[in-house]
Image (tube, rainbow, N blue to C red; front, side, top):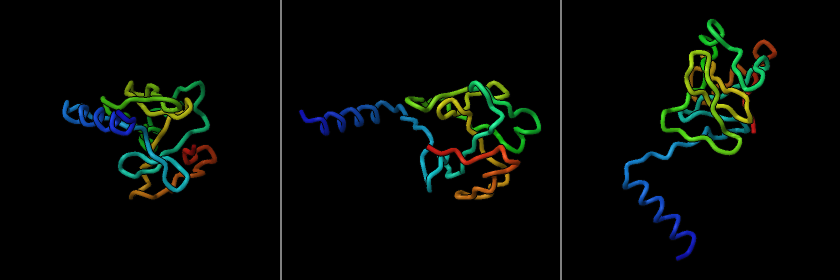
Length: 121
């Protein structure tokens, strides 16, 4: 059996089992976005894979939370958010959304305060 046929059969079996295959955020226009097309950001004050954005900060910059069935691999990992939830991280950097990004494609948080940046590969 060829690799393509094997992969097709594997994916077909997974689909029949009802198990969802979760994916890490995607890249669009040179930066990462979540499944809804919202830009993802990093925060310069985060250190050691730990979020420094809590309380008031997290109201404006909510963590990019993972779904229960999401799986991480390679450079994609999870960290614990300020409120104990599973937050996406890229190369150990926690990822965030920005509340003032009103629609998919908005990147109004890039450069905010000199410490917020679009998350890029």
